[in-house]
Image 1 (cartoon, rainbow, N blue to C red):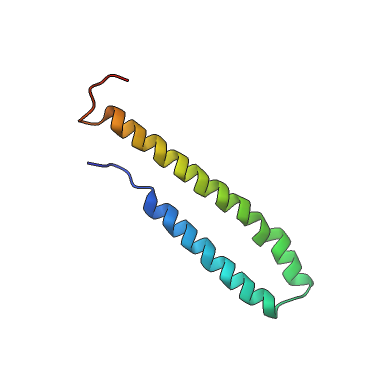
Image 2: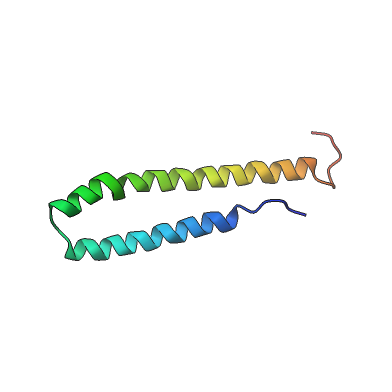
Length: 80
């Protein structure tokens, strides 16, 4: 039995980021002033690398956990 599932959280984060990107693009089409520029620079743009790094970390952790499950699970022989 699996004790973890990071796929659902990763998918939710990806979908939320896509939704935010669409909403930001729609808002930017109507909101083009210094306040928007400040918002983009201070809040929106810094999120992209953070989201990308978080998703990459989740994927790496999922791989590590899958490997640990294979190596330590009930079907393992105990040999590495």
